[in-house]
Image (cartoon, rainbow, N blue to C red):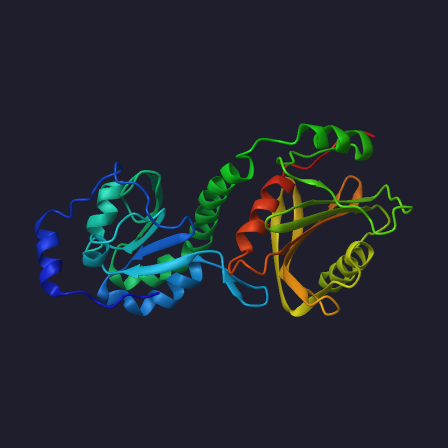
Length: 330
């Protein structure tokens, strides 16, 4: 959300004070997914590109951005610090450079990151261009680096939440014994039972956690040599039918990405919404699929939390511990 330009008198007073910050002793008071970006009045035309760079929006089926964004001119930010993440787009000729200099000192043009600058525990990303006329090109040049750095900082925070209650050592031993995999499952997760308890599978298992309802499936098929978006959706729907009897992917909501999973596997990532027309329920899902030493492997994650407006965080939490997956010798 872009905030309107403040009073010029405030701007003069703050600059004359040397742009002093409350300092890192000032604690975070914003939600952990909020990002402040500082941009000069003369560069407001770049706001859409800045916001596009800073967050992804998924649909479950309502829009669910990963980060909430607040835009500030330099004078406004001084009055409303306390953000966990701050982004500065500037050049030495602009007023916003005072904040860049406060964070990083005088630097050559480029991209920089630092922690504990304006508040204790914050993460600041700065892009400095040689001149105002190059702000747009520098933003485009470093867009991927900005996004990856911001995500890494956010995932670091979420990891603390994932393992706050510890790890499920019993389930880790079970998965090692039954499936020859290593997986750091957090406390609170348990197996999902099939509706037909007679059926047993060696290539698939599901786990779940309540409050809110979360579920994950791990599926291995060494006979699959190729996969694409539609095939992953078909597999997911068949797994959901097996366990939940009728869940379907809402294809119009699906967003396709890629990632390096577990630091090793080039994976296709699908994120979107699922629904069960018969039971009038639905929610977001994320699929991570890749070719491993055991052949095709797919991890499916889903959430059912009608009482929660924002749900993407829960998918990211599941992704964090799913990425601890390691294949061991059978």
